[in-house]
Image (tube, rainbow, N blue to C red; front, top):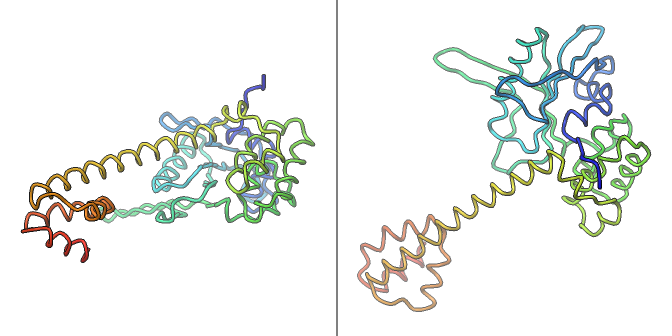
Length: 292
């Protein structure tokens, strides 16, 4: 039986802490000293990682790492709160970093700061923003950032079979990294055919299910499915209501007209529900469908 996998953010960053802190700060002189407790009462997740670092110029400081599966509009406020909590608890300057793993919906704007203006009082919190889909895959190999190996398939230029195979080979060279292979396989399935992925990797879903990344993606999928079900149910209910109202108002509908009504969006159905009160006959419905 495979051993449970501890492949949350803390485990990933601990694989190569110096390489990680140098990458996120873009300074080769920064080194990691230790990974600190990041539990702040109401803020506690497996993918929040607080690292104490040091550099010749800055001395000791904190690097606050938030690894987010997908960016949401709540993240800027969270980064502001988390940064303040870290500075208060450890009394050290803090460098916050937000790493987004998968791109959000096209309608969501990804911000690199928190800003507010309330009653003339302004607040602002900047943070380093890293979108993995914009990161060139070559840095993983050139800078030996083991933490990023599982994400190779979703990095820029990482979705090629030979690149994924190279990442797999690096994982297999180090026994301490072998548990990350299923996670790499999971992200590879986003860009490659599942059968091809299974040929490249040792696919072990038992281990993968222990990962917080898998659990977060699964929960996100369930929520999306639930939301889809709610919308679908509302659409079907509106269809039934409008068809019933139309039948009472103008009589039986021809099959082709009924099909046109059933093809309407929820917004269109709601508009039709208001308009049909003025219909005198089937011609009014046909005219409305033609115009809308």
